[in-house]
Every structure is written in structure tokens, then in C-alpha cells.
Length: 277
Image 1 (cartoon, rainbow, N blue to C red):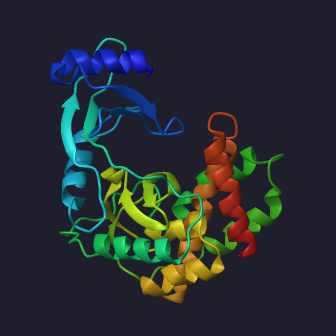
Image 2: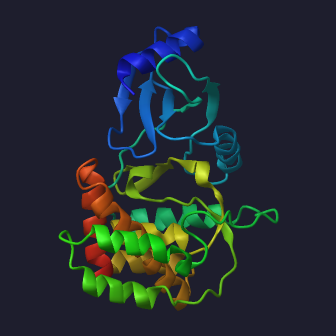
């Protein structure tokens, strides 16, 4: 997806926005090519097939549920010359993804997570895909990650760690979760959370899932701020570590050449998981 192609699709399908400047942002995204459109809009072009209607419904469900800004669906574009998928226009949210976080960001994230958990699951079950369900379901993926990480990481102790983490039982029922609270999906102003992006994965899952951000962003002291503020049990907190491990083992080798910032995130988070720092 080039700026020229994005410009052509916008101009052809939404002529009312032809005069708005268009600029690529978030060049290290893994799911969408994102362009800022004027001062108030964002055009998002999926890199793989996605259910944009379900994502828009999730965005509307979360909109206004917390005091933190989340994107509002504006329009849906159709496939066009050079691009085979539907695409979305949402509201633009200001802010900067955090690299590290202090106590204020930890407290804000806890507030956001509690607000999402307060949403009614309406009897919906876990979708059964990705993180947030049964840890051993990810054995095959972790085996792929271990194999591909040979030469990049000391794999033997990581295999032993997963053998322990995968056995952690589940005691807490599903709650509503954002599903992907990595730093790139968070927006901050100073040390405070201002907004949250990529809300299309909203749905029921293990309550430990959204706490993965604790390992991505915080040292031990500030992880404890998040833990206490979300009322996590000892077992839930260990499952946070397990889900974080499952995620980062896929980041390092998979993005080592195509998306170095994502691979570096994986390495820094893995260091925290293994060392406890």
C-alpha cells in the first residue's frame, strides 16, 4: 500500500475528502497500513482479510465506555484498482505510543482495563482464536517459535519455561478484553494514557490477557501498581506472564527482518519475563 494508491482510493470513493492531506503513519504496523487523512480522520487498509463490520461493531461498543479516547467508525471503503479488500475510515486520535511507563500510566491502564471488563459479555464465549483461552492450545505455535528462534535466542531454557507456564490452571471466568494492549496500540500524553487503538478485537477472554502490557511497559515496581489496581490474583498474574511469553516468542524471529521495532519489543519484554526486572 503506497501513499499514491491510498490517495487514489480515497479520492475515488470519498470525493468530499479529496482536498484533505494524506500521510502514512505507523509504518511498523503489522495488520493495517494506516494513513492520517486531514486533522480528524484515519484511513486503514488491511494487509490481510478482516471482518470490518465486526470490527466497527466492537469499536462502537467500546466508544465512550471509559474516559479514554477510542476510534469511532466513520465510513467503509470498497475494493478498488490495486487493492482487493474493503478498508475503513475512523476518527484520528492524538498521542504518542509509550516506550516505558511510570505509575501514572500504570494506574490509567488499570482504569481502562477495569472499564472494559465492566462491559457485559452478553453470553458471548471466547472466540477460540489467538490468545486468551487455553494455554496448551498454543503448544504447536510455541514449538514453531522455538525452532525458528535457534541462533537468535538461548532456546533450551525458554522451552523449560513454557513447559511450566502452559500448566497454569484457570480459575477466573471470561471478561471483556481489548485483546491486544501492546505499546503500539496505546496513546499517551506525558505519563498518562490518552487513548487506545485497534479496538476491533474487543471480546470475552481470560482476564489475564489485557495485563500483558505490564510486561511490555513496566518495571517490577510499576507492574505491581497495575496488578494491585486491577485486583489480580496470584494465579491470574502468573497467567499474565504466560500470555506475554506466548506473544513475544512470536515477535522476535518473525519480525527480525521485516519489522525490527516489533522484534526489539519482543526482546525487551522477554528479558523482563525471564529476569523479573
